Length: 367
Image (cartoon, rainbow, N blue to C red; front, side, top):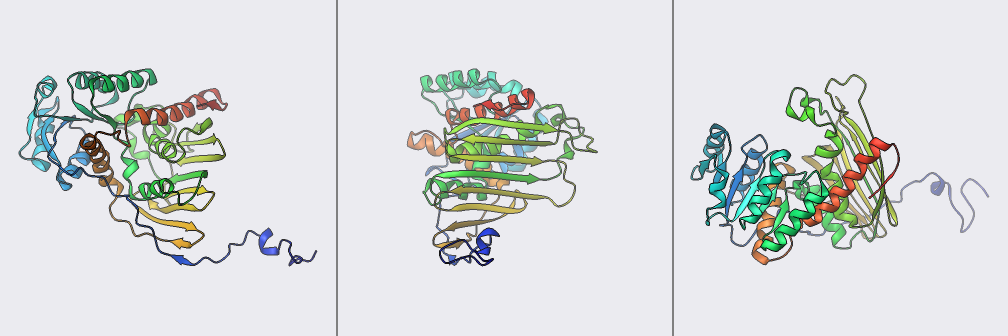
């Protein structure tokens, strides 16, 4: 055989993995934008006026949602949030008063994990729908208990996995749901950025900061495109040379799932050359995105028709937060399970916690 191949055989281009030209295709119109209920008047009370609460409230105000109360142990913080976003909302430091208020139907719990478990139990028992900050729970048994409690009380329990409505991740997920890439065989995420800002903040106390507090978004994304197919996870975490923050800023996870493979790579000590890429490979095509950060992404859909390049609107911060609450409100309105339900999120947590176990054992862990 010559270098250019024989008739019917492989060519030099085949050996060299040279890509074949592809035509430009029209981008499918997919429902990637934050879902919203038909009636946006449901009364929401936000609990916890810490740093992330501003992202919630800005998104809710911009989408015309109805926040009627802001609850915080620090009334000064609550007052500042009210002044900035919902001047007509009342402020309180009395959580019980929200539970006893029949006008309040939804509680957005942004408090830290240590306080959320009790707050969720009390809210569900009071018959309130709940949006919980992520990670939902640290103990899966607690999570199952809460899911069962919500079912008994006939209320919705959802998780603020706001990455589900980051425009690029939402478009890729919807492309998978629409069957445009076929059965998923590969999911690969590579993120490099500078996370050293955590030094001196409460985040520095989180041992598994990258895989747990940050990485849960991508374990949740992975679960959203492969469902219950994961079988095992092998993960590592390490301190980067020269890093000053206490927890490891480097982490990676290899996930084996039925008929496919996935990799999540997080380089959180990258001072220059930040980059973020996500690729989902299927039997019929590839959906991918890349850009300098989470807020600036270019998406492509590669299929037999060619390459489609959708022009997406919005940004993860803060449209993703509108999506998490909007999906809960839509599910309440339509009496269905939210896409970000706590029950579904338990699958994401199982995946993430298998990765944390693998870091400690140094071996693949079953999901």
